Image (cartoon, rainbow, N blue to C red; front, side, top):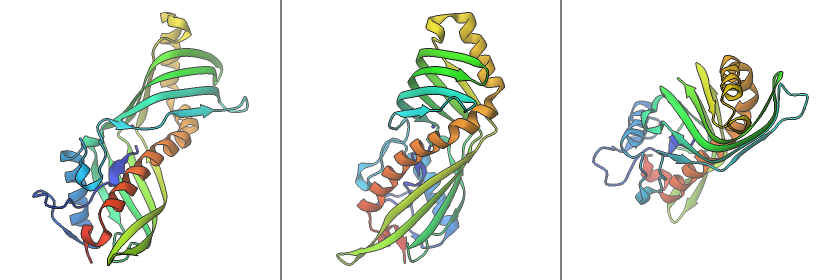
Length: 241
């Protein structure tokens, strides 16, 4: 899944790239076009301006521990998670990115689906049912719409203006979440199929419990990627200010 965008932000202009045109600061239409070009054509990464590989998008392990008072009284570890779907993202709206990088900037992006594949280990109880297993996990967000909020300050260095990201947050609305955990209950197919069906029937309650840890993990990876871009290229070279 992402965050990554940006996974999704990492963005806006590429030096000497024929398919990316410099944007005037605050030109929303131009900025949207450039973000979409990066997502569609540069998803394998571009070291020349610090863009990491977006497809798949690597994230740190995700560890979720909920106590017995939670509907998801589980300990879940997602190891080596990889996000897929960045190349199908499209930008719907941007706000900010004016002449002065100080303040808040926003990007809204959407995709047909974003998928997270990982190794997993889980133990505990989901709603009323016990769950235990270790194997491969597939968690897919259907028709996600992601709002990225960036709070930034400016920094002057060697005659250039740089954007320093101070806070990076994401929120996501989805049409549905689909989950598949292989090898539940040591490979007991009947039990595993029943639990996977139960998870997907009750996806809204489960998503409500999982979304904040997911947001934090995705935002952390996206923030690192965005910081690398804005560290590599001065803000005044990304935008005409």
